[in-house]
Amino acid sequence: MIIRIAKNSGFCFGVKRAIKIALEAAEENHEINTLGPIIHNPQMVEKLEEKGIKSIDDIKLVRGKPVIIRSHGVEKSILEKLRQNGTEIINATCPYVSKTQQYAAKLSKDGYQVIIMGNQDHPEVIALKSYVEGEAIIVSDEKDLPDKKLSRVGIISQTTRNIKDLQNLVNVLLPRCSEMLVINTICNATMIRQNSTLKLAKESDVMIVIGGKNSSNTKMLAKISENFVETFHIETASELNADWFRNKTKIGITAGASTPDWIIVEVYNKILECKGNIADKVTRIEDIPGFKEENNG
Ligand code: SF4
Image 1: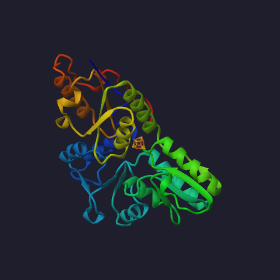
Image 2: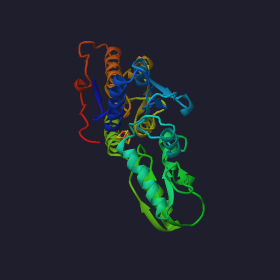
Image 3: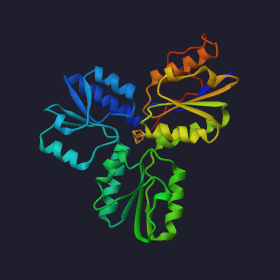
Image 4: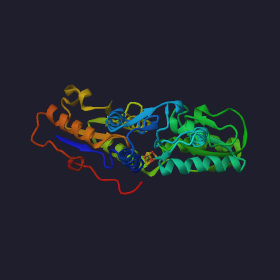
């Protein structure tokens, strides 16, 4: 029996950075707010709350405390309101997300009809849309495209989407427009995680995908994996079921970019337990076979 983890699983550069910024800010401030959860992982958000980092949904609840802008960013108008109110802003927006926001603004300023590939309800996309001058078209995939001819089109993507979906979108749209500018804004961390998950899913009898049920990038890993093998998406080790591993000898694990190491370690150890092996338990993610630390964003 072998249990392996997809390399680069877990926290990405942008999430590590956001948490570091939040923890440093919490050391200097008794109480501090984040607008929406700082990352899409309920267990990590709970841990941060214990340190005085509270997630709020409305700027009316700021009450003079500093505000951390989460890794997905927030709408431009909200940032402006916070500035007008004199609120101290601590910006933990991932630099890749900020870059995508700049592309959104520039494309619309240059006269392109901006098309964003992403989930219209996701905070990153809601924020991204706010940087577009005029109306952005938001599509989940090529099936959502409007059935009309477009002239100058600028395409960007939510950072955690899949490159094949972006390619499909471009293929369908190209014959319908006279000019197309495509910027691949899917971040490197996303692409690395998706590729390593795909590779491991092809080599495994069952896959466990760990991460927030509200995490886009984790859901995408689950979608990629289930095309090849039986896949279970869980948030914590308590959801594991020993039946999933019966007669399975090659077990794969992967985790979204917002999944903390300690949860991944717990899941690995619990799977070992399910297979009757407690001797090989680990205390660090680095000791799980297959793990490789991300060395860039
Ligand atoms: S997934 Fe990519 S864009 Fe999102 S926080 Fe991580 S590094 Fe930044």
